[in-house]
Image 1 (tube, each protein chain N blue to C red):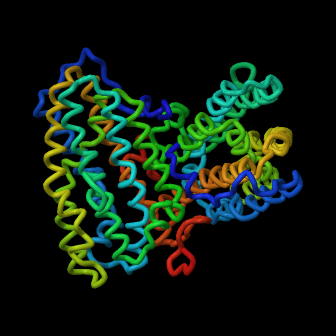
Image 2: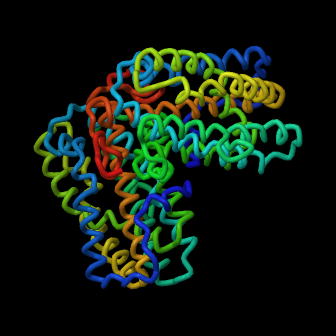
Image 3: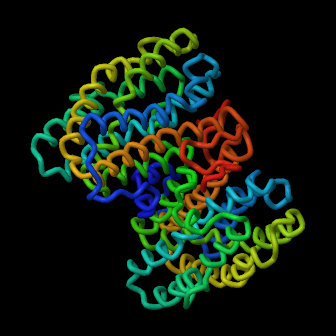
Amino acid sequence: MIDSPSVCQDSVSDDERPLTAAELEAKLRAIGAERYHNLHPFHRLLHGGQLNRDQVRAWALNRYCYQAMIPIKDASLIARADDRTLRRAWLQRIIDHDGEREGEGGIERWLRLTDGLGLPRPYVISMRGALPATRFAVEAYVRFVRERPLLEAVASSLTELFSPSIISERVAGMLSGYDFISSDTLSYFEKRLSQAPRDADFALNYVKRNAVTRAHQQAVIDALSFKCDVLWAQLDALYFSYVEPGFVPPGAWKPGAEAI
Amino acid sequence: MIDSPSVCQDSVSDDERPLTAAELEAKLRAIGAERYHNLHPFHRLLHGGQLNRDQVRAWALNRYCYQAMIPIKDASLIARADDRTLRRAWLQRIIDHDGEREGEGGIERWLRLTDGLGLPRPYVISMRGALPATRFAVEAYVRFVRERPLLEAVASSLTELFSPSIISERVAGMLSGYDFISSDTLSYFEKRLSQAPRDADFALNYVKRNAVTRAHQQAVIDALSFKCDVLWAQLDALYFSYVEPGFVPPGAWKPGAEAI
């Protein structure tokens, strides 16, 4: 991480009265209500059935970069945790994404979505058609988890507090809005409906228990805010290149491109 | 760096015939001709006098994040170089940006530009109004220089091969196009007209001398391409938020905002 984000935040000292656990949770939920990417215009179009097939392909192709880095991000967190309970609980996230055997797991299910959209797997996995902005945002997230204090790394996962509502909306909206999308291709999200709340509950309890000073609590709030930026920036880039004004950067996937 | 970019590139083996130094230079210049950010629509508007004052402010505010990290990026490179000649030559870049004393140097000159645009220095320096996409792109650049092989780190600076032309165009265009811009506020660029070619010549000679296999040469080409992505992505984000469609992400500077 560039060290500047620390100066970006409201400064609070350890002397200020710590928030109660309930107050901290309320502040975290308020971040989600303001900054979670369900509010982004690209998602409103996606869920409302207002994108064409190429725009949905661009979303799935780019979002693969994020999916692919989740287990690496989670392993980086486990590698830094000296608390066996935390490591044990966090391990399930890797299993969920990588699967216990070939053909299973969240990344495989994401590739079923890109399969269903007619994107060749080697092209998707190479990430060479992804927008640079996608790669930069995902990389910033992985770096954050590797380098910031463990408490902040855990807190950056808390966007999952808000994901069940976006997933329900997405699955319903996409199934009704697009004839090129089936419930099979959306199987990734069905699994996340049960996985995300379990993960989010654990992480929320962890930060409530471990963020004991006001400064630590502010760091937790800032970490969640940063993670919202990571998700939001990916949709900004998709909207810019594939909706309006529709400028695709050199080298990135172009709608209708023959040679993938 | 996320490790994926390596799979994104054309693969070449060490067995392929190495390019001559002249062929390598030609390939590097071709990258610039296709991907350098002088081709970006935001720059065409900026240089053509077609932006309003707030849009120019957004550019200067965001670009500060890039300027501020240059000496840190360059020190990271020097810290990895076991070649005294390289370290000695590269040191000048830090001096150019930080100055030899208070009130000098490229960062100070950039702040004169933001001063002239009425942006308070503490706000600019805090970077808290910058677009997250700007921070992610700049961070990706610093990380690249810190973590990729030294040859690629040097090669990523080669966008300076193309900067004199963009700077001349920018200074002329901005002076004639904007009554809120003076030659004093553009003093940053005047200095770069002499500094950039000196730096670029050194780096170009370095990569021509040190990239001896075809695989190393491809890595140099890819590094320059990556750096073009870093610059391009920053303009994508500016265009998206401040030109069209004009969606500013939560927390970033908004045109006309009173409370900076």
